[in-house]
Length: 488
Ligand code: SAH
Ligand code: SF4
Ligand code: F3S
Picture (cartoon, helix red, strand yellow):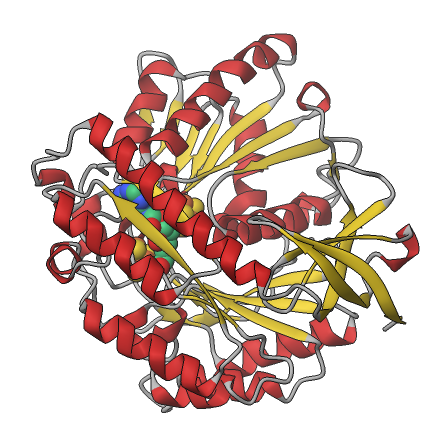
């Protein structure tokens, strides 16, 4: 559809709709293997530069790598300077209100560039673009934006850029329904760690969460495609991969022709010669015994599990529609700990959910103490339009929410401190990431369990594994000295 507005913008508009997104059909998801850049776009970006700013989770980070890959394939070069760019894309996150406000703030800051360089294409993509209210706000208040597209059609980027150039009008192309799976999109990966999507979307519909609406229904990539990509990354010399999905434990549930789940995938990836394999995020509900058994084989499967719990109170979990109880979660933790004694567990929490009482919040603090997490992300509940929780009475006063966040952070910090202290005197394998931000003589890297380690060393070690003996531990990082230098 093409709409002429009074601003004389032509809008190619397939309006996003949360109610449409909520419908989960049984229709088959097709996999397309024949992606190619349209011939008329070849060389289109030569002599031009792009900048992509990414907000939100790893899924968005990885989508940005794909968009960079496509832009570079048509000739664009990367720049970090907004004033130099011919294309600026904001890849946005809708998870909380402050994530969205950041993007609107950025749009305000970038507005003057449109005056200085009228041929600049300023685009908004990612999860916010899937929201009706966001599109309306951009149309009304930020109509200098040239392009809006969503999470289901990033493969259309070359076409959309072309539309922008030739129409000089605002182009809006957002699909309310998820599309098929598109394989073989180019990707621009940097460093020695790589993200690998194993599935898209989420069907869990936790009552507070916008993701099932912005990312569509669960669709798993075929195992042979994931495995081929991991093998290729291994051949290219990547040291670590992170398998991505909003709920990786639901992997394979949508296959009708094969019985192949996340545990099977991990078992197959375990056999591939790549040093470290991580995954995120796992939902406690679908974490099955087979997966635990496979993870216990270790090897390249690291002993770190991010297992978001959100709340330690069963009643709260029910209202959040997490579909497990505190007891179920604690049983799962015990099973995992039994199978993998040195496992590191991390989590996400929401405080101040509608109706959360002081006692219910205390259950969350007690759970942190009981589980002894190594780290956790903690958030104040943020109402998201269109979600069931947004209709609940947001009755916890702001001050109380902040107080609870502070208390929870203290409990998490105490737990992190205790867990890190266990590393004192131990020798750990570290993948060296770069020069430490605070001291140029120091390098930083991560253990298998994702702990940040600082140690003295030279730049040539970046991208390699070293063994470090820990002599200092704090709440946020550990430090020590290199003992064995194993250049892999
Ligand atoms: N799929 C992952 C979570 C992805 S979102 C999972 O289920 O574990 C990352 C985290 O953001 C969530 O775990 C939750 O803690 C937080 N979050 C999601 N929606 C939120 C909201 N409306 N307000 C505050 N925090 C939220
Ligand atoms: Fe959101 Fe729940 Fe899905 Fe995670 S599992 S993305 S919190 S709906
Ligand atoms: Fe944000 Fe979308 Fe990820 S809402 S957290 S970028 S899936």
